[in-house]
Amino acid sequence: MTNTPTEEREVETGDAGTPVPAQRGGDAATTEADPIPFWQRPLVERFLVPLVLPIAVVVGLVAYVLNISRLFLSGHGHIPIIVGSIITVMILLGASLLSAAAPRMRQSAITLVSAAFILSIMSGGWLVLGHSQPEKTGPTTLPATLKTKQTIQVTAAPGGRLAFSPNQLPAKTGLATIVVTVAGAGHTFDMRDPSTLFASLSLDAAGAKKDGVAFFAQAGKYESFCAIPGHEAQGMRGTITVTGATTTLTAALTAAGNPPTAAG
Image 1 (spheres, helix red, strand yellow):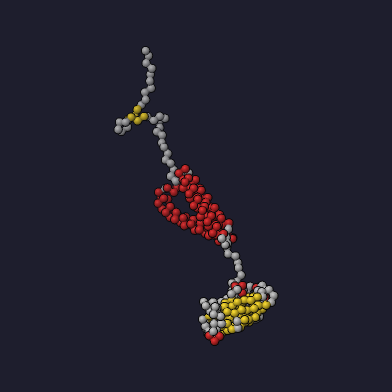
Image 2: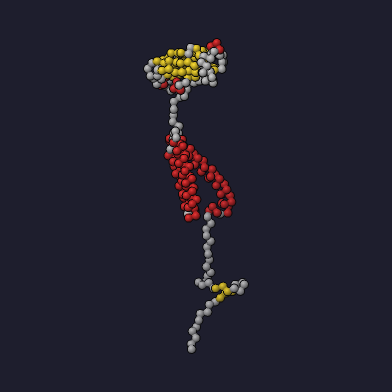
């Protein structure tokens, strides 16, 4: 019977006598360490992240709030309420869906969905930027220094009475200077129709005269009154009856000898 030669395998023993299989291939294999992500490096994680992260969060919040406000300002009437309701529902629905799907989604997918939502809000804000900017409007009141071709004289509180005298006055369309003689202090002179662009007069010094300029665009009756509570109800009111052709503010300014841009 012939013995078949067998290959003898070398067995190394460790420090504790535990047999350790000899590694084949001659040189021992070395395992390369996985690269450390940039944000997890010791110096970056200790010094750079605490500095950059708060700044990034603040900048992101400011940008988000600005774009949300642009979406609200772009609408008029009930539109901002509708937009706000839609955004609120989207936030709640998106948060619920992400919360339910989070166990089955990778972290990268969750981050991508969140970034897409924020990006859509910001994109909407930039798209409506032109609509949210206030449009140029005309003047709200006229300066008392404007030239006019007609003057209306009124006395406030004559003899201590709560009245304007006279309380029925005529005028023509265009610009008119209203001069109020203050017989009794503690009153105001206002025009009810804002289209007159008349600045409220504070009648706070007895014996003084206060004046302002009113614009009457078309014929009709324009009411004047004292804005102190209770004074109008007790008789401190009047009516200016205007006649003439309808005009514009620019035409009225020019007709009275003012530059077209004098109203501001």
